[in-house]
Length: 110
Length: 126
Image 1: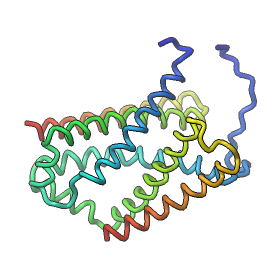
Image 2: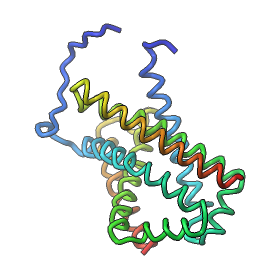
Image 3: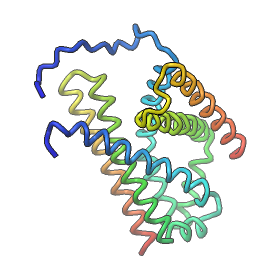
Image 4: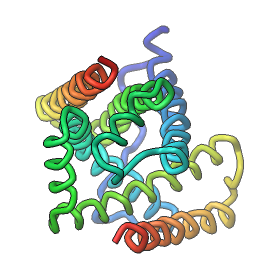
């Protein structure tokens, strides 16, 4: 996609990820697992659908949070160096979180 | 697209008058930033809780801590606000509820339903 359309791509990714995140919240409220102890939690997450839904959830969180935090930082932080620093921190936090999530999901599916 | 954008930008938060639609909008942003801050904790808790039973108990104990319970209530409110306000924005993108009366009404509805969700959640989980 051309540079001209880069904003449009972010706009679209923000909305596609938003729809998935909303659907996941509803799915987890209806069919999720919480408070049933370790065995139930692990057994629930080891099933194919919850595992895939959870992986996609954190990928969608990563995309959605990146676009949203970038919008907020670009609007309110005008000092170029500080802006770059904050964007780098946000990116690193999201990447590290995704690595942690995928280590967890790899552990479950082992 | 030209690099020099000469259109005026006015983002002085202390001097902008906030109609209810703007309150929902800035609330959506504040909620988004707070939810972002929760992401690394969620990732940490997911890995901790899934690795072994001791980790699960540690994660459960962390979530039951008094201070954390307060933060969880705040996060629930922020998530609810972000969720309902986000649905409102998706509908507005589809040209639904764009006129001023409808937009103000739906903004009040977002605030009310988010608070109702907070109270329902705290009541159900405590």
